[in-house]
Amino acid sequence: MRVIAWEGRLDAPVANRLLADLALLRGQRTVVLDLSLVTYMDAACFAVMVQMIRLTWTRNGEVVLRNPSASVLEKLRESQLDHAVKTELK
Image (cartoon, rainbow, N blue to C red; front, top):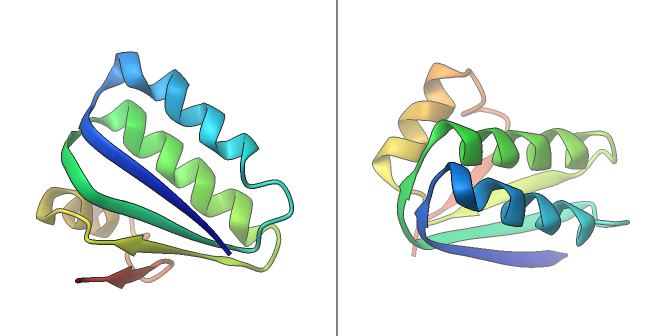
């Protein structure tokens, strides 16, 4: 299991840095994405998160979102991915 923590304002200029986190997933089936310190996430960064979810699916794995904001949960519902990931609220 790999834990990855994102923090701060996640907007388009940050998306490429987040893409680097996908490389950390090599061989991982379960990923915990800690969003506790995320203050904002735009569509570009949300797309990176969706790529992470799809990558783990190809390994029959799962992504657990730790403390996602209400806006992230809403985006997941809108994209019909809310049932594809687990959420963990602490």
